[in-house]
Amino acid sequence: MSGAEIALRPAQPGDAGKLGAMITEAVDARAWKPRLHSAAQDISHAGTLIDRGWVTVAELAENVAAFIARDGFEVDALFVASWAQGQGLGAALLKDAKTQADALELWTFQQNTGAQRFYLRHGFKEIARTDGDKNEEGLPDIRYRWHRPLQEQKT
Image 1 (cartoon, one colour):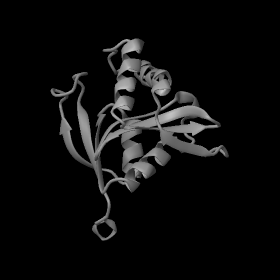
Image 2 (cartoon, rainbow, N blue to C red):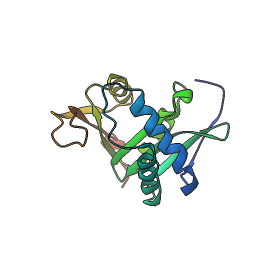
Image 3 (cartoon, rainbow, N blue to C red):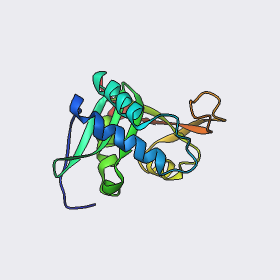
């Protein structure tokens, strides 16, 4: 982890461009993942997530470097810009999300082995696999769940 301090804050509408660019970059970096949306559509999608109040961003040196979108217990998205990977941003966003919920669930693609290792390292357990018939990309995926130990759950 770098010496730079990570700052978390709610996303603002003006963040949509940077968040959309992270989505586009992540799709482009994975040859196995089909490009279904334009960069402009990725920005629009990020804007929608922000408008719903679901998004927390992580900044490094006041630069937006990562984000998580969460609807209650469901993690809809977690992206880290390529230039900021390996600096604890994803872990910081997950840790923050865990303080706000007794359980979290998410999907990741079976081909995304890096994400699988990340979620397992952070206490998530695999609960289901599909052949991709229900996701937009049509790619096999895995459902993960994390839950706070019963003795630590909020009342």
